Image (cartoon, rainbow over all chains, first blue to last red; front, side, top):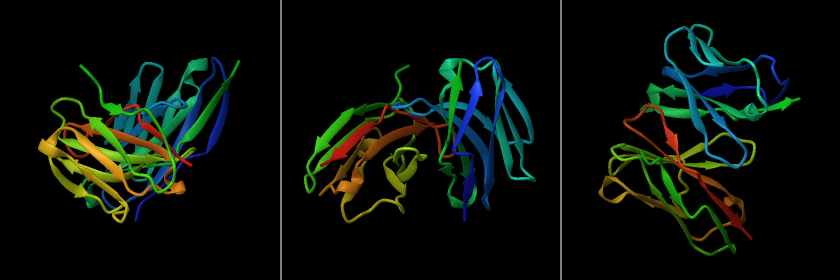
Length: 111
Length: 113
């Protein structure tokens, strides 16, 4: 089966750093996506990891450990506009490359 | 390049009425997805198309939901009859190929009264 866990809510301060964790269990893992979703809007693509390690893209970085079934999204120099839900999604090639989404982490940024 | 287009953006209907949603994917994208998203939850796949073929519809409630993707481009998702529990946001997404990065449309927010 498939299981994706991420915290429901997090709060951080403007200008700080926050790490959003995601753990997963899937038999045919072949990549992990992070999406950002502002309230009332569609998810937008942030990052994709398929190999172990850290991928950096501006203020956002994403890390993957396949052996541990673990990923995190790191947001630096937080801005108020970063208040959104962050969705972790796993590609499962044992299910015809199905993409399974977690429930999302709602991040609130305080001044 | 235009993104994924969906219409309508909002729909309010009474229970037992039919409703239809339309999606136009990004040009050249072979794979099209319909998702349902409830408040505070991640998207849940309803159906996936590879070109005009429905390759994963295991989560589609086939007694009341139907979908089609004629000519492998636009797609329509229909609910007949709608129930109160169908109130949600219906998202359409497309990708170049299966498993690739998905790009989402703005969604249709359905309210069933």
